[in-house]
Length: 571
Image (cartoon, rainbow, N blue to C red; front, side, top):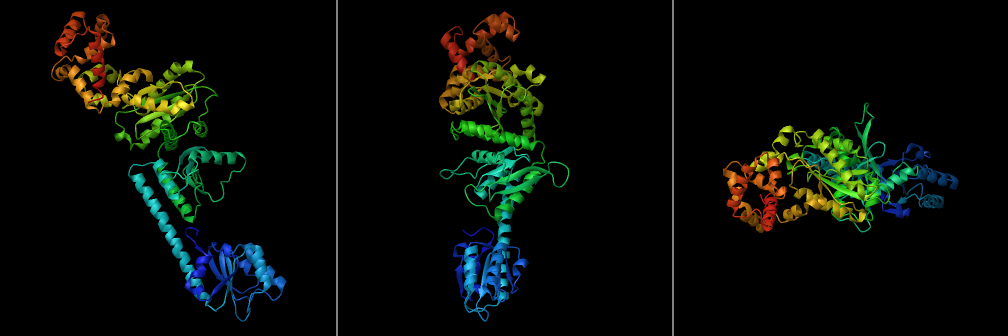
């Protein structure tokens, strides 16, 4: 295959100027895909000293020398210089090429071509040089298209991950963004359906890391690397490094130019505060999401997690935890700096939890998944408590206006539910759900279960964290939220009560919720609502009349509890 952005010896021989000379390949026919960097014509015996390599050398043979030893030395020096091919025009100097010239070219692996007709060398030079310049211009144009598309990705709200995925698709090979000391920030594959036997980008990077550990710091042959400036003072400072490995196919000059232009674009993006931390967190979030969605085999997951820096104790269970940040993540998706600040705060707060943690950030879903390594299943509750406190503290630090932790918020929690105020609902604090302690074989399914449960959770907003098992009913109702029967059930069971609260005061839904939460114990309900008993009795009587229900009947109580939970999913 002809390399991108070059003209090969075979193509040069097919151009009209050389074709008129009736070229005949005498040796190196299998090497005609060599790229031609330039064309040079000369007759001096020491012509090799004037060349840099990659040239197509045109000669009539005047400098070859009359003796076999001189002829062998002439060809050998050209081969050592690394020229693309030697083209000899037959004529007064040679009617046929000398045997030593042909033999040496064959032994040195040098393409040797003889021209049976005279051609003007200046015409050959002009034509090939024009072709080389046109090829280079086409290469630059192709790289410019990639750069322009990457810029459009950035301007449309994408960040470093989207730019890297776009570049990986262009290169059709895995792309890696690393810190100067070799720590992985993000790995991107070319996307689409990988060919049979294709390795995951994280597995490829693990191989690269193993190669470096074996004291071979240089990347595999044919790789493309581009430094991203901006890591400190001085023009040579490096903030990160873009690496493309030729795993699925070869990389050509166009990939090198495109990588350099992409690196310039990434340098601008990485000027944003703490972008590297947010980027690494998003990369880990992608891994955890792929694990939850079954796109990563359980047998491969531990090795890929080690690549991302997660090393739980041998044999210990894993604790999946998911934090849902907001009801609707769309208004936040473009706030790259705020997400970077959140990733930084999360990393700092979780450092004090005391167990290994693999933390991710999922911007599209407004979600933070993580895996924690436990020493044993018995410490699940204590670790979940510490993780939840750290997660909520990080949100308080990074997003104080969205954390739901203000005094005013806590003071008005019950009014937020009572009046169904959308403004208060938008300020709901983050929801933290801890799954069961499991092994790698069940970690993906438990992560997915915890994520769905976090979406479904609608209990007390000031609760520190939820055990995933306590959300089974909420999760069932959340999965039925689009079913018309669920809305009809809510309307039938508590519809009159909801209608009352829309037009009358005081609202009665909080009273019923508190009453059911205390299992019908009226004294505790009254204390919780700061009411005297007679006022509570009056409210319960009004609720019973509105609904036409007996609040002492266990089946009625069950239906009311389910309807109150379901109403938050059918609005």
